[in-house]
Figure 1 (cartoon, protein in one colour):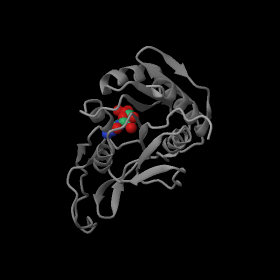
Figure 2: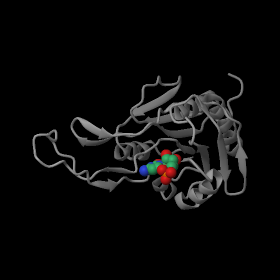
Figure 3: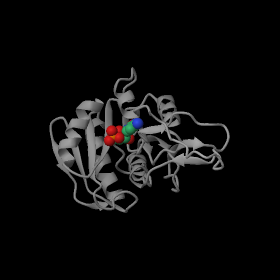
Figure 4: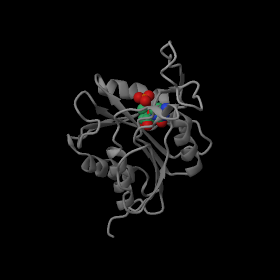
Length: 218
Ligand code: C5P
């Protein structure tokens, strides 16, 4: 009803952490709750977009009107993101694990051996950077950056490195991860727009309004 500037646009969003298996019962994870990504998916649907939300393991309800695809690992997330293309806008909010265990045994690692097992890690694919170089690159590609210092400076460097159009940078030196509020800086190639500390759904709505302004009429 009313204001639906993203009607007819496909918005692809990742959210939450990833779980990287060590063996059948253990995994590597992080503290992402998925709340900011889910709030963005909700705001995008409210503005009329067709929304695909690729979600890592989180305990959150699917926002109304959103198509949700659940995944566990970074590699599964990348596969589902690529399957969901084409998209007009992609917003990569997930806290994707940088590394995964290099070899995952089929059986549980037992404690009875004398040696403490070593965890060998290997690099995960970078989903955002992959989309930036993709033949079906979304017209507006947005990444997130969690930083604890020099937030805007690091975001500008990340924009160039990842090949995306905007970086939404948040200062996670406090309790943002898993918390209800967020203060972000939207960093584009030209400008930096800082949004005041606010509940994650308010931040989501403001961000989506800005995205609608950028792509809504095209
Ligand atoms: O390099 P860094 O992890 O700080 O970059 C964060 C941004 O990159 C986020 O948008 C995140 O969703 C995305 N990312 C990704 N795949 C990775 C690592 C990060 O899409 N393997």
